[in-house]
Image 1 (tube, chains in turn orange, blue):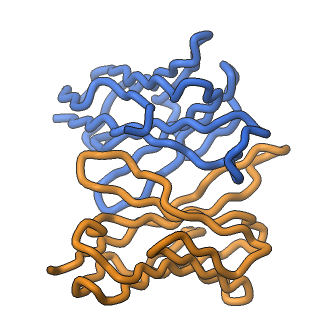
Image 2 (cartoon, rainbow over the protein chains, first blue to last red; image 1 turned 135 degrees about the vertical axis):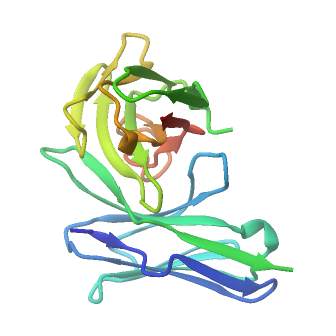
Image 3 (cartoon, rainbow over the protein chains, first blue to last red; image 1 turned 90 degrees about the vertical axis):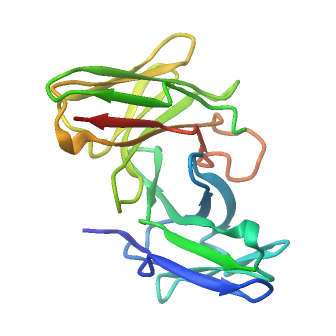
Length: 115
Length: 119
């Protein structure tokens, strides 16, 4: 049973436009939400995060929105650039026994930004 | 460069064999995590070590085992390999609790991965 779902395996947008990547989760106990970006032949790299006590966090061209009632997370990239083309993973943080936390990842969305 | 080093980058082996994947975490990081990424799958958490001790287990098969050594590097051992074990294996590390950096508790820094092909 997937606790984190990224329902769009791929997304294609035009350079300069907005990219919106979506993520749904099932467990209301998750307390931190992260986005990672992955280029081919590299490991995932941390991009941006948001705490469950907030509904928006912005970092340059990247903004993450959290809708707790809908258990929905989204990443907005504006304006999109060709260098943003990568796989984007949504990850959620939850307790894994005692005070230990663990991340659960979605399957990823391949973003292609066309020049 | 994340600072996490994984070796080897590629590994080709046969069914039934045993392999060892190695990970050196970022300097100062005490936690090491192992993940498996199969085709069309997300990152599946396998196991976590913290300062030499197993801290959490995920979907790790009994044929797989890991350890973290006193110098904090970690090894993932995969035995009796099957075709379905072919995947990318990632190692990640994270800073100790209380380290500056906001949610340092679980920002994980990933290595470039080891691609395992079982033929």
